[in-house]
Amino acid sequence: MLQISPEHIMQQRRSSPAGRPSGTDGSDFSYRMVVDSRYTKVAKGKSHLKALFALQTVSQVIGSLLLWVSASQGPELNRFAVLSVSIGFISLIIGHIGQRRSQVNLLRAYTFISCIATAFSIARMVRNDVLLKVIHYKNVEALTNYELLKVAHLLFGVVLQIFVFIIVPSLVRNMSPPKRSQ
Image (cartoon, rainbow, N blue to C red; front, side, top):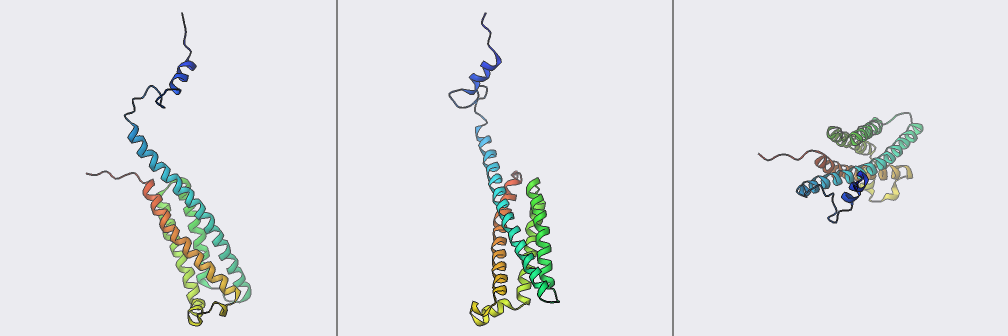
């Protein structure tokens, strides 16, 4: 009597000409494709968010260094700069936890808090009249290298914030379960 081993049966299932195990009828194909597409979008969104976190971390480190240089030059510390850097780091921590745990509410909080940090950064520049110098003189050469670095840092932060507004809502939409129509 011929005995068939379990390994032989599994080998036959794997090498089916239809490309799927012989035990399925294929009726769940469309459902699997919808779920797979959403999971793929979530994975891409998370990888984009991870790259954005890296860039924002670099921006926050640069902001911290600019704050340190500013503190060493004068006795008065700009409150908006301190708030911007502090809130920026807090938002990065919240966003990173939200991304790791796939928690939509933390990602929304990250978007809101990072927006506040960017607003404080803009307020810092307006308070120091650096942007008004550029607009008034219409010449970047009127700025010192330090002021020019602060303006470049601000513009970099604003561009990153625009990407936050693009990436995070898309990721949240794909992470949330689809709404049922009634």
